[in-house]
Image (cartoon, rainbow, N blue to C red):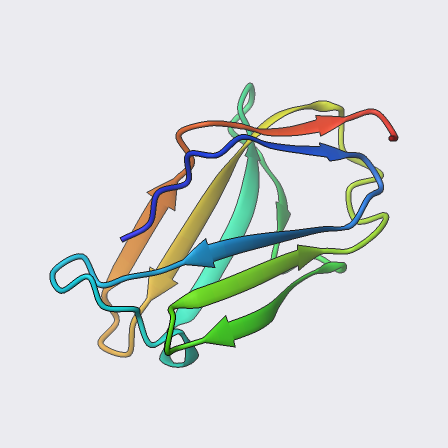
Length: 116
């Protein structure tokens, strides 16, 4: 289980670490994040276009801890330089070793502002 409901504000061109804690919906126990596939992206709230993801340079998973289910995604300095200052939505998708996929769509926004 995961809720993405915190508004993130980030000046264009800054670095940002985004933490997530993933738990099993049935047991409440932390997910074994070392044995799952994780996809993360930002979607433009106006156009629904994917604008930034783990497939892009400057965006990567920097931390996984299966004992807590914690994952950190880092957006490097300058990875957002080419994006518009606008509102975006985070989408996180997890696929387990059985191929079962779960997708969380942010309820709030990821706000990219003009350079700090």
